[in-house]
Length: 185
Ligand SMILES: [Zn+2]
Image 1 (cartoon, rainbow, N blue to C red):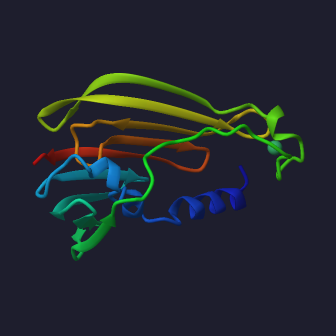
Image 2 (image 1 turned 90 degrees about the horizontal axis):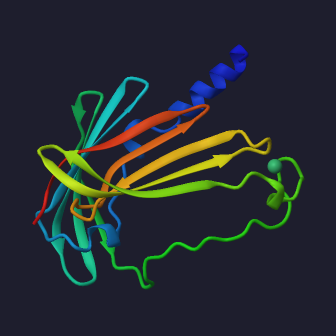
Image 3 (image 1 turned 180 degrees about the vertical axis):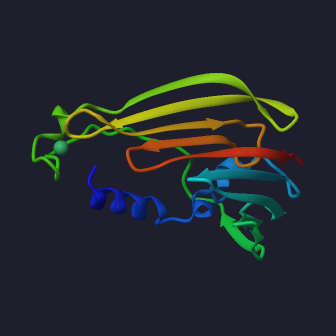
């Protein structure tokens, strides 16, 4: 790796502050939890740590109001309010077959190594609690078929916001988001 590549890689990895990678609440993963429920997530990137606690302050059939408190670089930031309204559609993910040519190498997209995903169930500890989790892993590949990105999502219906763990790895960046505690109401 040349010095320039190394510098570029470092800049790319630092582009986003660690705390900005911590998830913000969305409707469906919080829909089953009443006001007062909370979750605390931690992240570490290159030795820099950040932590976010998200609490449901108000809730009705169409709207949830959250408060988020972030601690980064050892300092606690001012609490932020976040309002999430119920989306019109239902939750769902739809797979699509790759079509056309790849903008990077001009070969047909369908000739590229396709993403590989796995799903499994397991139990995991979050603070003192043990929760049932759904784990999904996804690997994507570059034009040469080498690993580009690997992600693992560990979710639990027992945890407000559902996220228990999120791990990410690419050539440039590696991080892990961990739920360290929650309160269910
Ligand atoms: Zn390509």
